[in-house]
Each structure stands twice: as structure tokens, then as C-alpha cells.
Length: 325
Image 1 (cartoon, helix red, strand yellow):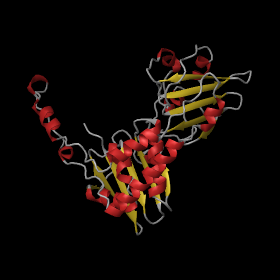
Image 2: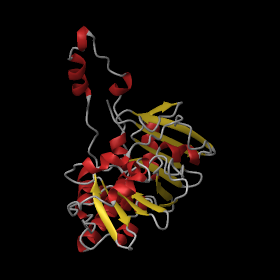
Image 3: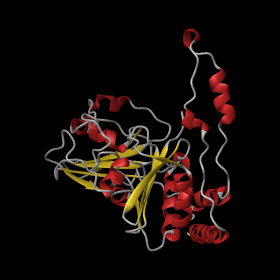
């Protein structure tokens, strides 16, 4: 239970890890006031001496003051929420190289010279048969998969699979796609997309979430294919989609307003929730145990008045531009 976050601060050639049991959902919020506030925030949380793996780490950030590099990842509620956070960070971290860590913890350990496999066990990337794709159902697709056909045309489908899962299904998915019926047009932006071009032997992928293992190319089954990884840039796939299946164009204004409205909101207090959970009898009389770390509240960013003013100014300017657009 919880939304575990891990933080790394690099300064004067040394680095240290910190942990919050409840911080994953607030990684972007804690970063937005800028380097000073974010560093103070992370150091106010618990210092640890081990790494969380890709399963348990649901959000993370690495602040490298020596090289002025920020690496971070966290799950966003929507495509617009992710882009709004990226836009704000570009303004409040001026002079820094701000990167979304698509490879999750692997990007953090790689940055420190520890490799990408430190927190991954052999066999961590599980492949499966593509047949399940035909039976997927969704209210809103998680991602979009598109395919260039032999005649040069492109077809596209909504998918409730995450982008990386289309690669885990292997090239056999391509033959299955070619005979599938069309899916409804999009009403909202997905979290990512995959485009297959069998003639060029190329896979193009983008995502506004982590795609752990994307830098371990070639993944199993794709040994003679080229990967065109686009980060969170959807525009190449947008240019390939058929006219009757375009990406929507939502405004960032609403997401930026949500950011502005949430400034200064403290993290939720989970004490009562944990107390109720601990009071529920376990099976056959066993007693539930509350993880001690879950009882430690997240220490959020506490920006100075100047940092808060700069953040509000950045959000207001971006919202005004998004509204005008």
C-alpha cells in the first residue's frame, strides 16, 4: 500500500538516496518550485541506502547539481497533465537539462555510472503471445498502435495495452493487426503510441510514461529491427495516422489551472485510512501488519516566497499562452 518514491541528490561529487512511502504522486509537484526547493524537500524525507526496483518505485527524481541535470518520472493522470508539468519545469529549472526518465530507475542508475540492470533481475522482460490483443476492450485507449501496410497506406487502432506491451507481444502482433477491424476514433490523447513499418523493419515508439527496458534494444524477437524511440514526442506518429483517426488536440490550459489551484495543498493524511485497514481481521484470525514506513508522512516541497512567486508567474504565463492558443 502506498505510492513509493525515491530521490537522489548529487552534489560536490557525492550522491545520496532518499525515500517517501507516499511521494510518488507528488514528484512533479515537489519539483516545480525549482532546484532549491526540490532539493530541500527530498533531503527532508528519509535517507536510505538501497535502491527500489521498477516494481516498487512508482516515482523518482535525480537532481545532479554538479552537472545541472534533472531526471524524473511519475505517472500523470493525463497526457495534458504530463505536458503541463514538463512546460512548468522548463521555466522553473532554467539552465538545467530536464529529462523525463523513460527507463525508470534504470535511467537514474545509468546516470550514476552503475548501469541499467542494477535493479532488474534476469528474465524481467516477459514476452507473451499477441493473440490477446484482438480481445481488448476499453473506454479510452491507453495507447495507439499504427501499421504501414504493403501498399504504403497506414491503419491505426486504439489499444488498452501500454506501449511497451506491444513490443513484448513480438512481431507476430503485426500479422494480427492487419486483419483486425477498425476501432472508434479517439476522443482524448493516449499515454503513448507504437508504429510498425515492416518494409523498413522499424518500430517507432513514444510515451508520456515509463517504458522500462526501452534502452535494452533489441528486445526479444526484434533482433533485426530498428527502434526509433521518440521520448514523449507524439508528432511523428501524428503525421502518419490516417485522416479518419487523428490525435485530438486538447488544450493545456485546464491542466495548468489544476496545477495553479493545487499549489500549497498539503499531501493527504493517511493515518485514519491505515487505522481502518489495520482494524480489519485477516483470514483465519491473522492480524494485519502496517508497514512502519507507511506511518511516515511525505514531506512536501516548502518553497520560499520568492520561489513560490516565480512558480506562480511561470504557470500564469503558460496558462495565458495556452488559453490564447
